[in-house]
Image 1 (cartoon, rainbow, N blue to C red):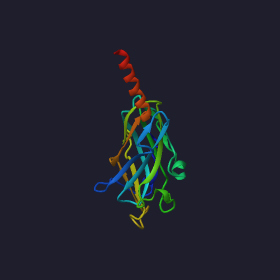
Image 2: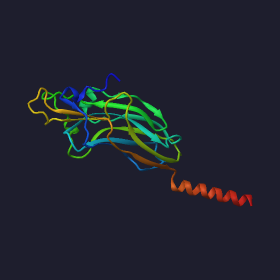
Image 3: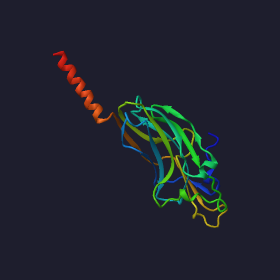
Image 4: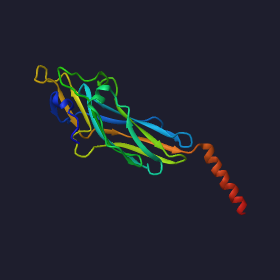
Length: 212
């Protein structure tokens, strides 16, 4: 955990946000999955806030319910910006059954010399953080729900900066560590094709007639 992001804490005064709102959202590439045709889906993670100017980092787990027998594994990837990749991401790996041990990522910001990446700016909609590839077990069936959780021993789930705060300060800006953002999870229904379900029903009907 030593690499828990230097980030904007070096760029300004660090604060704990209280009356302001930050959100982590999980968006699936498909809400309904045909497990006879689809081998994987993508979960994209976004951050948003009604204060500050940029997202500078995030640290979160992916916690699933209903993933046993449906999800074969999860792989993190597709981080949001080259700046965040330059700092490096800590990927703690797949935990099984649709769970992931956690991902820490962030960008280096040192005002006024190193500005946050333009792609991390708030105010134009949620900021893309990264994605997970979720392997779907063939012919499986079930409902899987995901939520983001805090990684043990970390101080935040979302980190933000207001580059306009503390003007003339040394350093300028103000950073915020959000440990309990609002979480908008995702639910995915995994089913065989309707035709497969119909065939299963027909097979049961035929078997019942034979017994008679």
